[in-house]
Length: 164
Image 1 (tube, rainbow, N blue to C red):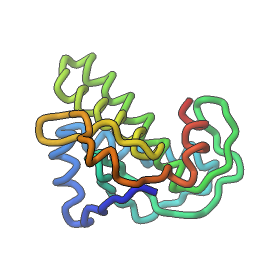
Image 2 (image 1 turned 45 degrees about the vertical axis):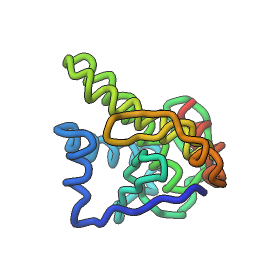
Image 3 (image 1 turned 90 degrees about the horizontal axis):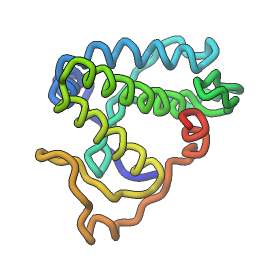
Image 4 (image 1 turned 135 degrees about the horizontal axis):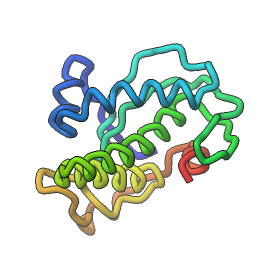
């Protein structure tokens, strides 16, 4: 898997507010609810962590290896995966949904941030890194950044099946 850093629990809220502003509470609440729905009752809480990947994408992850035998995914695809993989898929759904909500509310800047993160997260989990999120938004990766070795997330196929 590609490298990431975990954001310290004591600064998680500040980090998320900095990244997605007043959508942080909506993101937080709906992420837990969505994982509960995906997990067919296997999710009963746990310590979530924010991971920031080398391309600047972030995801709020439940690093739990418990296997869900048949994920109840919105795509109607029955998938077996870990709670961690299901939490990553929940991030994809939520980032896209929150971006649509932001557009409806006339907040195009926030929608762009959410969609940029959605795109960059998909790239890094697939083992690619064409784009980098930095202070100015999304930019193409440099030749040096493109040359760094990376691998897809071990459960990337399951994650894609859940969100496609």
